[in-house]
Amino acid sequence: MSTWLWIALPLLFVVGLFVGALKDTKQIERSVKKNRDKMNLKDWDTEEGKKDNWGVPPGEYHADDEKKGDDKNKD
Image (tube, rainbow, N blue to C red; front, side):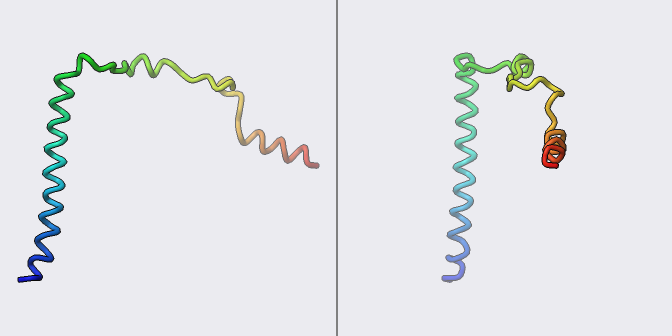
């Protein structure tokens, strides 16, 4: 009898966690559907067009070239 308790109680706890998580996700989905017009959603098509400027023009910096140049300067 006690071995069944050691097996069944943790399993019930894990099943309860999964059921609670499913209920929470359904509640979140409902609230998102209700409040979708109030959210500031990003338009990913325009976000992809924006690129960060890191100060190095594309195609001019290569890490391999820098390592080769250091070897030449050591001689």
